[in-house]
Length: 292
Image 1: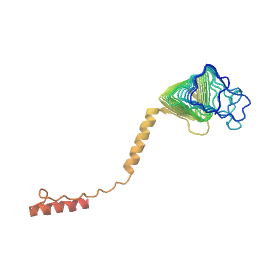
Image 2: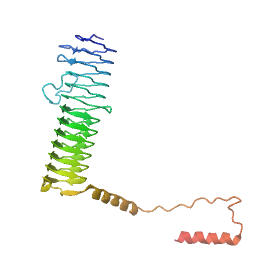
Image 3: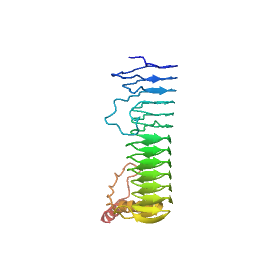
Image 4: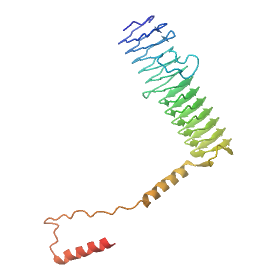
């Protein structure tokens, strides 16, 4: 248990601090920190205009070496704050407002993150607005607006607008607008994509809507080359989806049919066949059905 040196205009609640050989101590200003839990923070851990909430900041327990996202990576420094259900690790967040947090290796800069429940991981966001997103695998969003999306596998977004997308496998999108897309292992520059699936492509100054693109290079809407050895694919997404549905239906129809087991015959006063000729007629019908 410990006090926080230099906390100013404070209101701190349920404090826990683990000062493991600190060279210098936190400096929190204009505060209101709630259910706290700081650990081995270093480098004059500043926090400034504050209002954290369920807190937990850590630093110093970062893996060695930490990802190189600028000189301040791995050093706590939060600035004009307002983090909510926090849990930040080796921060540098700057002009803040992070909501349902959990940020991990961070560096957000002129920040602005939002719910739902947060989570950003080994990230870096620069002058970006991000809402309801998941970033993982040291992905970067720089001067971009990203919402309701998943960005992973070391992908990079620069000066782009991304909405309801999955960006993966080292995709790089610059000065582009992507909506409702799945983009993997591609480079998209100055392009606009709506409802597309793009795999292993390079797109420059191109507009596509509801297309499935693979292994091609497009400039200003024209196919100008191939990426890799795979077949170039450019087709309407609806055509591909219909073909996939037809294929699945054909596979289902080719499955062997299971014979139906005859159900038990209920015999009570109402179902007993009392006329002998009707009884034998029914038996004859059963035999014919079995032969068929």
